[in-house]
Image (cartoon, rainbow, N blue to C red; front, side):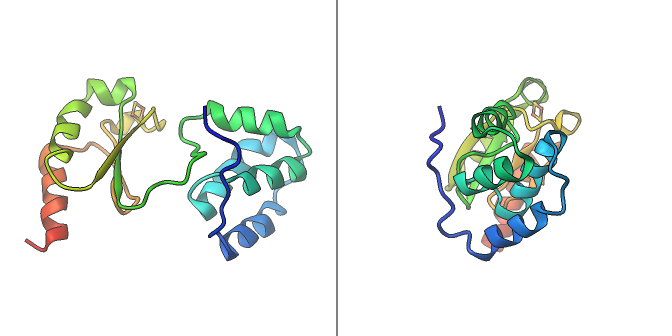
Length: 153
Ligand code: FES
């Protein structure tokens, strides 16, 4: 269970810009997913503040907004740890070789995590790298090439 008290203390202008942009969406329940995606675009994740303003603007009960946010694995309710790699271990990515990619990532120093399906299954296996880039059709060689590139080799 993800705590609802995660806040975006360091969001600053990004939160204000998100709130301003959110007002361009109609105040209708059908805009809930676009609002979530907009929040992630501005903030990289869904802190408590974003969920509160989405509920207020779309006039949807807070509990319903929060419950919906927890139902979609591509929505992040925890602040992503920058510098870490996140490998999708959903069914399509597992079938396309996620474990081989994980083995390649774990051989180099750095932080690593796993995520559920990111709804990019046609690009499996997918991973978000330490720079926040989504990499599709990933291979072990490409992972190694990225690490070498970062080291300047
Ligand atoms: S299983 Fe990885 S994106 Fe769907």
